[in-house]
Image (cartoon, rainbow, N blue to C red; front, side):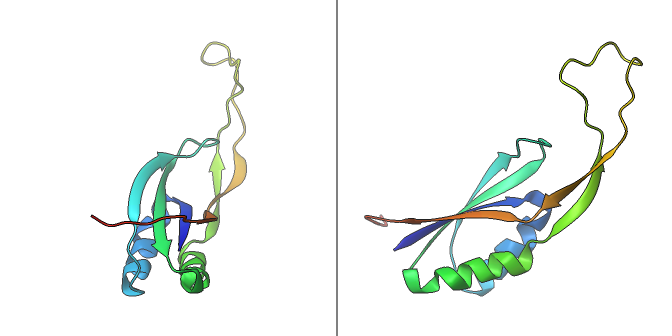
Length: 109
């Protein structure tokens, strides 16, 4: 038994969860927040047999795509309003970060 932990951008959530359900995979969805841009993410916990891990990762990979976005990045010591106007910076957002871990024991009650 394996546990796939997938952190995905909130915009990709619907497509990923629908694709997982169509593929017959159950999951637990936990709301989370990204560190750099502080945007909404979703963390999915997906329990599956080892032979199905590649299918799960394929579904996630197909349904989550990176995209470019412009953001204003303020320095941590920004002074009073009007003293600094940052130029927008292009960053990549979206996609998924996945972890696959062994499950020593699984029980459903």
